[in-house]
Length: 423
Image (cartoon, rainbow, N blue to C red; front, side, top):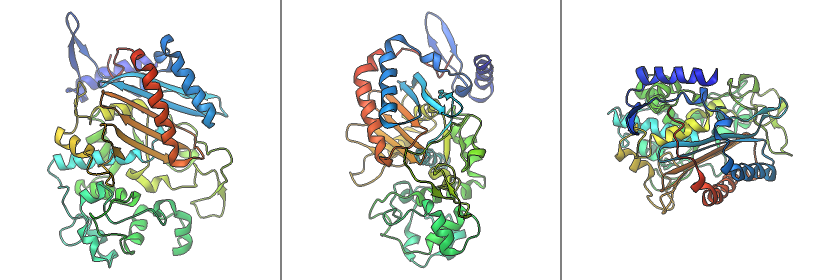
């Protein structure tokens, strides 16, 4: 039923929703390539390849070494999805195996998605990257009375994309400080994203916008508000209709805080072994497992709350990489702007790093989740997302990167020549 439903949906999408994606390739005769509704089509068995069993073994050994319950892996080459597989357990208690169609929290990979949304608005002529965010003529005028530091009026959209807005996480990150903010300001319920923004705008900036680059979740939450203000629509709905669906991604959603509210295809998230329970963001004094109520995922929104399968993430990257055959949803100019290496101290737009070798990185870490996207100049893209924390925190993505490097050396020549993005 899964495959047949995927075929039907793929045909309908090819006819009605994605006319630019149904291409034809020469193989003795012109054959239609029908785009696939990925999360209704892919199974682990489709990537059970005898020659790549050593790759499977190495990933299972990686899970065992780092006490990770489950991961999802997707690999593309030349804009073709060649491998997609889940390993380990999506839910240990229920003995549910991880599958490639499962949607996982991707944490700060969400920033890449939001940045694509901003670049889409720029290409539609709806904003400029040099538009001011606050002050007279700024975009977010609803917050103009919240600050006294006049440097806020220097912040541009470009500054937020590059983490140059003047915010910093060095002392604390307000989006991961929920319980203490509640106590400090007397909230009787979890503060909204707008309430957090108003609180933080009352503080002086840490540096003059454009003079430094300091990682900031708050800056990307402001980009979410910019998308909503410019479009007049809900962020999630606008992104799904104008960015994700045109890219061939139909099952990406903003996630939720509690286990009971997880999406139908979402796995169970686990803290690392030995992690202590956290104070609940509900403010009721209860202790909770950190992935479920220890952090306010919903407040993060486009800074860290997207939930996606690794194959659909791979499809998004194939749509913003400046190459083919997958049709890009951004111009080459925008792709180059997003991936340009300014200097070693400045973040790219949306990506976390673009190194001198032409490798693009995007990482993401939440309690219960580690995610890594690496796009290589030879046309390969490797994506892994876990459903378990490591006690190494955000540094754990370096271990995933080391696994990718070793696996590429050993197994890239053995990857099949096929395209699971299409039938």
